[in-house]
Length: 122
Image 1 (cartoon, rainbow, N blue to C red):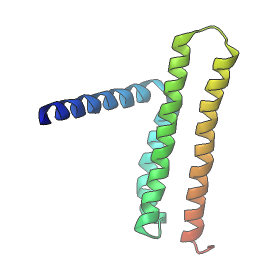
Image 2: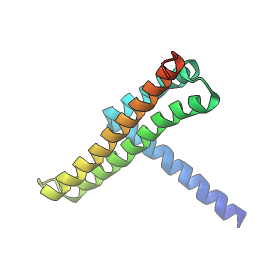
Image 3: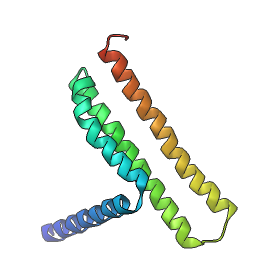
Image 4: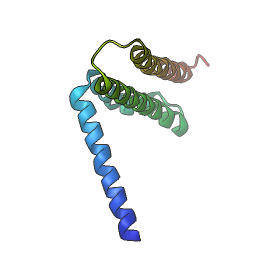
């Protein structure tokens, strides 16, 4: 029983690593978000006024990466269904892109709030 659970966990870990590697190789936006994460981690420790705020600043960038991965998955699947222009598939891809955009706005707001908090505006 334990062996089966560990085997499944190992397989899931390998699949996740493969997905991250593919996204990194194939998606410029994901590579940019990895750079943003590398920059965000040390900045979070400078800007965050509490341990909770530091974690929030890092997690919001990770959330952005999650949404980007889901958007990429939607786009890749849609492209696999048909390469022809399809109005409905275009709308689905636009909604995935909108999800990334909304997450960017949220992330920007969280970071601006933390910066305002750090410099004493709030």
